[in-house]
Amino acid sequence: MSHLQMYSEYKESGVAWLGEIPKHWGAPRLRYLARITTGGRNTEDKKPDGDFNFYVRSQKVERIDSYSFEGEGILTAGDGVGVGKVFHHVNEKLDFHQRVYLFYKFPEYVSARFLFYYLRIFLIIDLKLYNAKSTVDSIRLPTLKNFQVCLPPILEQTAIARFLDYKVGKIDRFIRKKKQLIKLLNEQKAAIVNEAVTKGLDPTVPMKDSGIAWLGEIPAHWEVRKLKTMSKTTSGATPLSSNQAEYYDGEIPWVRTTDLTDDFVTIDDIPIRITNKAVAETACSRLPIGSVLVGMYGGAGTIGKNGLLMTAAVTNQAVCGIFPSSIFVSRYLQFYLHFYRPFWMITASGTRKDPNIGQEHIRNLLVAMPPRSEQEQIVDFIESETAIIKMTITTIQKEIALTEEYRTALIAEAVTGKIDVRGYAMRDEGLEAYEGLGARGLGLETVDEEGEDLLEEPEDAGAYGNGENE
Image 1: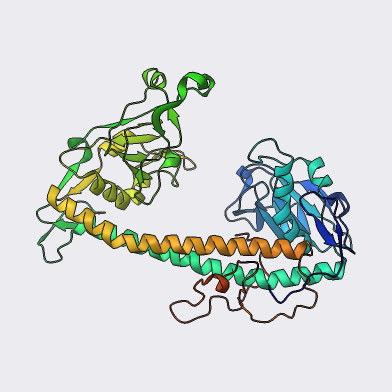
Image 2 (image 1 turned 180 degrees about the vertical axis):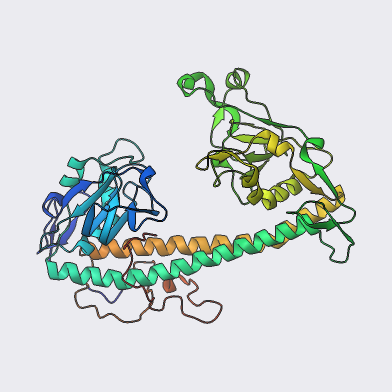
């Protein structure tokens, strides 16, 4: 914030990545600022109707019917994808996973709220600095205890935490509004696709009952055909990673479910490639350009994800490839699969935790089929109508990313004393540009469709991190 001043005197912190801190601040080890322990529960212990919050290693807070801690604390993931990313500041009765760390019993010279903000930004930086791999997959207790914290006197900690509660509350409200707008735009995009592939483009055309409850009426001149009557399908395999030298880093693109999306994308830039030897010695089948791909395994988040191949490729065993056909336009089939995606779970098998579909499910898919020329018209219409929506979503995503950068910079500058917020008066100023970042300073939209200021003080300002970490 341009009107905020720096401190008058600084000194070296002794921490390589931290640099200078205000002269009267310290940099103690975390072991002196809180007690640290881990939980005793497993993820399987959660109870959806439990009375208490259950903190696991992800952003999502589960429920449980027991509690092992009561009071103020900070929780963070000890391993998994949440390492250095998932933090909660709480004051309640709770239970927590055996690989979740709890910081508690803070001495009188420590503000837990200040420490929460500091850890949220700088713990992952410290972990990466001393980690040989590109990603951090776990934190060990000795590492945590030795982590250095830039610590001002308690009154300044309280002032900084209050300042950040106020400003971060505004930022988070802005981001939530933008994410909600993206959700609405995606719903609009899906509605365009769903209407076109089930009703066609001519609202005056005679209709008939498709005979399928979830499909309803379709144009009278359309057919309903099983996919297996129009094309063949195949899936692939995963070459042994133990044979890395002979099987990987080849010339043949190898598609996994992580390469698919729920946004009917075309696929031509495939990061992993395997060798001809890998294809010859595994169950990988070659798929030509124009093949439509469908995710089969991995639960509700993966089943039905799709892609349209723009280059010849093979797949792993979790991806079904549908070969091109003279009967359908591949892009039309992909749009239809996007419409059908919610229905895959009805016929999925396996456990509730990890349901899946197989090639037989896909082969028996009932497809509403207009003549091929009409399919081409529908494809052109959908691509034209959704192009502007896609561009708008991309613009909003960039706005969110820049605002998140601003949020990170703001917290980092405040908790390390690069700005002096002691005299800051809480007032409705919006998000000013700060070192080139910020919402209004970046020309971002800060007024919604009804004229409401998206940066107005939210009702829950200051609640950030209390069980909800976005």
